[in-house]
Length: 179
Image (tube, rainbow, N blue to C red; front, side, top):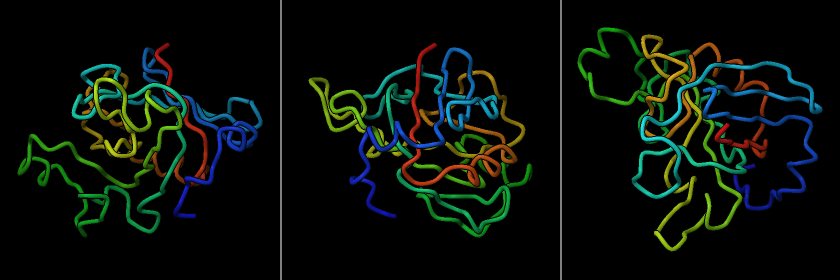
């Protein structure tokens, strides 16, 4: 399904799989039928919690996975603008672009469900997770996990994002909490 506007909070709350991202703990937990199945160490935003456009922060609240991207790509596939470049990340490639925020292996593009918090806009301007291009994605294995260093997205180890990608669907609920 490409148009996830039809998903509602009620539908997702009754889904058998859901994700919870805890910013204080830097973890992503997968629940199935409300039973904790697995937990991954992640890296959220270096700039902290927030939802405003251009803030570089990770937004809180209820989201869904709006799109799954890269299912047929190899591990460490490099993405630019949500499209595979045909390149596979290596340390040598990383040295050529040391300031780049690499998006690798898979992308789970998030859409906020809460108007004024992570969807649409509020008195401060745009706060839309989807329009901000907030993803759960792979990152170079040399990047630390367990500490906030991203530009707003939720970074994962490449092996972890490959595993998670197979366990979720478009429409899966993702709740991002502060603690």
